[in-house]
Amino acid sequence: MIEFEVDGQQVQVPDDGSSLLGTLRDHLDKRSAKDGCSPQGQCGCCTVLINGQPRVACVTPTRRVKGRSVTTLEGFSPDERARWGGAFCATGASQCGFCTPGIIVRLAGLEEKKPDASEDDVRLALAAHLCRCTGWQTIVDAWNQRDIEINDTRDLAAAAQRAELEGRNEQTVSAAVALGDGGFADDRAPADALVAVLNEAGKWVVGESLHQARTLAGKVQGRRTTLEPTHPVAVPNGDWVATLQTSWVDPAYLETDAAWALPGQPAVSPLSNGGAFGGKIDSIVTAVAEHLATEYDRAVRVLFSREDAIRLGAKRPPVAGAANADGTGVLRVVATPGIDEAIHAVAPGLTVEHVQVPTELRTSTQVRGAGWVEAVALLALAAGKLDRVQPIDSGWAEASVTSDGINVRVGAGQVLDEVVLRSYCIGAAHMGYSLVMGESLAVDADGIVQDLTVRSFGVVRASDTPTIHIEIVDESGPAVNASDAVFAAVAAAVALHTNAITWPHT
Image 1 (tube, rainbow, N blue to C red):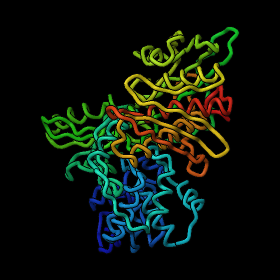
Image 2 (cartoon, one colour; image 1 turned 120 degrees about the vertical axis):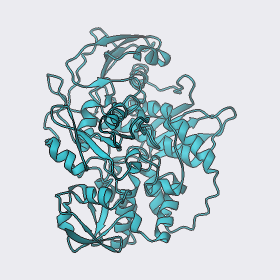
Image 3 (spheres, rainbow, N blue to C red; image 1 turned 180 degrees about the horizontal axis):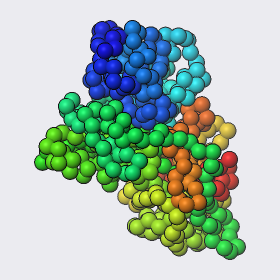
Image 4 (tube, rainbow, N blue to C red; image 1 turned 120 degrees about the horizontal axis):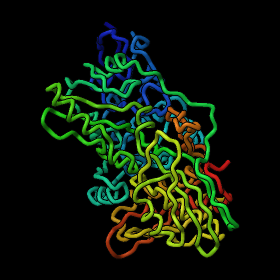
């Protein structure tokens, strides 16, 4: 047995070789520490305090904390939880809420060490974390408001309605979400559930715990390759005003696919409190959980590792396009059923050509803005300007890039909740900027993905993200999604500003 202190209580746990994260979640029911990349130690979602210092629990062996003090977000005092949760909710610094518990622990550690830390210090601290939703800026806002008495009288039901429109999935808005209580699938699994993971041969291996299942599976740790990303689709021949090529890109959601089921019952969805940018809509984990629960006649948790999510999750299809100033041209795209309609909705003058390339990856139109965002950018490059972007049945966005940062003007019908709308627009703007300037996956000539770590995605860090200015136009009419339009408008504006004809642009 290993004895140490957790949240002020002495505990004893089996010395079974588990990581501290596995021990906290599976033995001690501490669910604020999340598993976003385990055991890569790269996303920061599992950050806890060990003797007062922020550490990632997924790469910390439990044996290493023998006799030490561990503090999770559950162990913060009620006043501290209310202070941080309130600040994050009031500023829109949490959307799905998966990454924010680790971030709050990190910021609390920073505050203890350096109470007068600057915004630059905060952005530097955030280098240890990955947040896909918020675009970082609202997290800095939360830091600045952590000591302000918050009188948040917002209608959180209306805020949740806005969040559901933007995230395209059921969502909750509250301080509890920022503290990790958003109801994620793996957080709600029965304590005695079996755990199923994939082995190297792609077969499901079942164990009594995550540690046992992973040990039985014998999987090799994921890696980041030195192979440079490529552009698998060739630009159409011809005399064109503008061209554009993109590489493979992962949606980069933080909570890897997870589901669980009881025998004879439907599985709990992997989309709990977040839409994963369309990347989990057709995940296999629900069907597998239902099948295994029936086979074993027990509750079964089915979990993807980060490597599994990269290999099996839906991807943005790479494109290569060419266009003239009048909006005519050709957009070649890695073969993806249904993508023609999405592209023609915003770029009717483009001929869409499906291209077959060697790949183990699968593409999907469900991934946020797949294909049509690139079409908007190609037309902007060809025209030398960016008009208002307004997808069908959506809000509109205008964007520009200046020395002051990224400027966005947006209309979304009835606002419902300005804090949430602003947060989603900032997050979408960061996603558009990051798509052009940083994101890719290296895939070899045989189509086998080589980048298998969460940091391989190239998501732009907080310290490298320009200031994002959002102007919301309050309109009459029904509330509609606007962040998709912001995503496309900012990607196009950044491409136009930098003349980025290959993505990622360097």
